[in-house]
Amino acid sequence: MQIVLSAVFALIYVVLVGYLTVRVEAREQGGVLDAVNTLVRVTDPGSPWLLQLALASITVLLAFWFLWSIRHGRRLPAAAGLAVLVLCAGWFAFATEYPQASLIVVSSESPLLEWARAGTLSAAVHTLGAVLVAAIALSLTASTVRGRGVRSTD
Image (tube, rainbow, N blue to C red; front, side, top):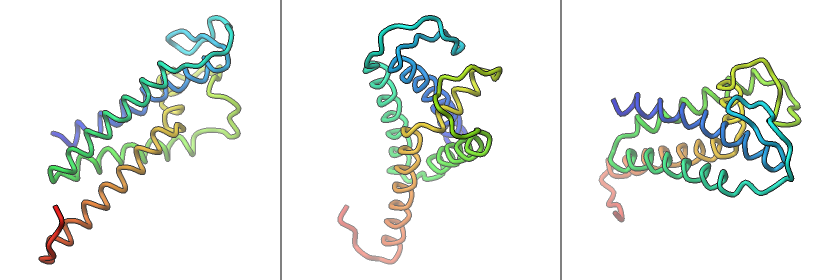
């Protein structure tokens, strides 16, 4: 159950990061978007610190979820989350036309797909993936060392 939940959390995370990333970029450029990514009005460019704080907070919460599961001897939920992140990033890397000048694009796609694409192109998702790779690798190394009878420093 925790494996499926971790995969669902990772997928929701990618879409939510994309949603916030699109709004961060719009605010930095002076745009205000509605719920379906349509430009509503243009204002002065500003610092979207609250949106960036929300982005960092959800990244830390999901990282904590995965690291807690690894710490308690369950690597599969973290591996499932990592697999979802990698599959999403791989899919949108091949499906996105480059160079993409901006995340604020007028397209006929579903807003959900636009948010997922923006999320997979976000550095927050890539960083979480790197953290998961390192944590899983370290946990595998630690279990191998313990399995050989070598005393650990825990």
